[in-house]
Length: 209
Image 1: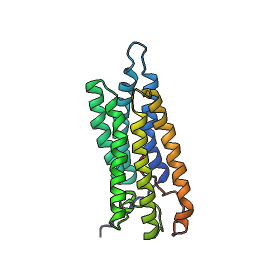
Image 2: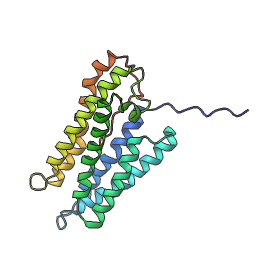
Image 3: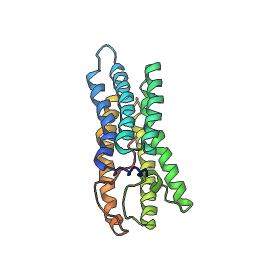
Image 4: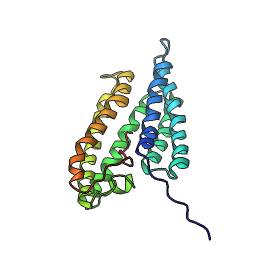
């Protein structure tokens, strides 16, 4: 008799590494690859590094977690697509618009689902937030939908070359948005606990783009 293969337990720590790792490598490679003679070289090197790192993250997720989350699939697909455009045209604006598209996509998905009475975040995060009831999922979907909408607007502001340099945008994207995401997630915990959330290592954050 064949025994069913047990599902691997989701790991919030590994999910964070898979999400933040490529961003961190993007930041480091952009700094190390910068050149005084070519102001765009750092962005190109960083983008190429990010493309490789996000594909590695997909492979690791598949073999370590037994699955590739919808958010990682979207981030990888858009990262490779806009990364290729960035390298081909030697223009960092392509990789800078990627977060706006990801944030806007999830904002529309979550807010659209909320308006139709469906907690779409429950399907996006799959096994995360164990024990959370349907009311909690609805409130969480609304709050993250609005948060993503705000992030899309902020990214559009900070990616404007006439206002901010690429280095400034990159620092805000990697450190500022990551910190803001964690603070926002923590701010939601009291509400989630009132709706049945069981805290554990399997919690997962929505995508950081």
